[in-house]
Image (cartoon, rainbow, N blue to C red; front, top):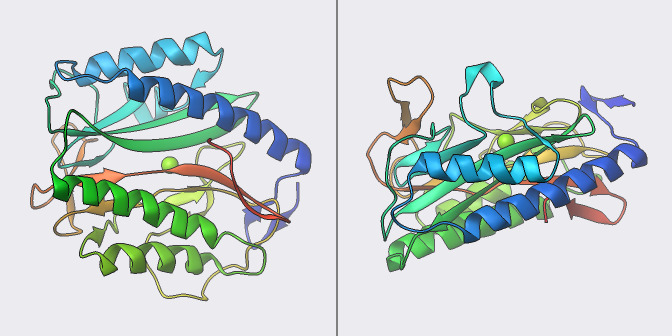
Length: 252
Ligand code: MG
């Protein structure tokens, strides 16, 4: 496994394992997503996630990671990331961000979606659409010969064009034999900076987009990150590989 500018280059065999891991994770997230209903607690969502993870014979990557208690991070409305599953009941009109990592044959995969419960307001729907699309704009830059910050710039540019803000305090990352590998992938920055991208790089790209200020704070539980102004936040994440044919989304 070669290293390019500190970024570990995966062999085709490793990419194939990561591809299988991604498929499993995306099916878990899809099933979990369609099981969400108002009245569930965030703990119920986590238990369902654990059940699906076990059923697929993979390992929950987040459980116990630096002491995190859940298999899933579940962040509601003003929750940005790292929400600890608990007693909070989800209601119609809420948005729920679910972030899950798994380990399959020693390799990690990481994915997040934000799901509306019931009928979301027009503004919330716009937040979700813009965040999801910003992820795809970022992924589209993950090509041989581009620079790392082209991904960051594409995300930020699209989000700010729509009047929302990108979170600075948390970033995407390389992924493979570890959950967090180099490089860090901010969702903001100027184009054409940082490492040159190459085939075999595998990244978790994950824009976190706030309706109001980009600033966040962490609650007293030491984990749950919320927007400083209490306005809603959305989060979408895919694990992707750079191939000779362009970016490949592994978590779908
Ligand atoms: Mg991640």
